[in-house]
Image (cartoon, rainbow, N blue to C red; front, side, top):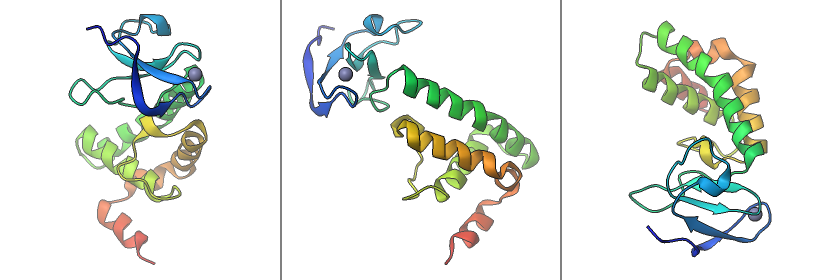
Length: 152
Ligand SMILES: [Zn+2]
């Protein structure tokens, strides 16, 4: 694969506003292992893994700070999802979808689905605050209850 240097249309690095380019591997981006093709800005060491089907980025272009914020989100949310899955005797992925919907309902704009990979650091901080506010409420909320609570 030699797409190195190909410019991504209409996308700029969110940090330096420079051009984001497609790289055949992630070696230049200090990843622990090669994650394969990435869209990235070498100057900011900011990158996003490429969706092999669409060729599009799978997250927003993320620097180390944003990656850490995202890891912190999952650090807060995984235990809630585990508890919800156990409490509701449901599959982990179902509990995850419900927890993310519950969080989304309490964020501005109610983004659905809530794609953590596309949030910025402030939005992630907000999502963590929402998740931390009422962990028992999210664990015990049934999807139907959530819908009722959404009514004005
Ligand atoms: Zn940059």
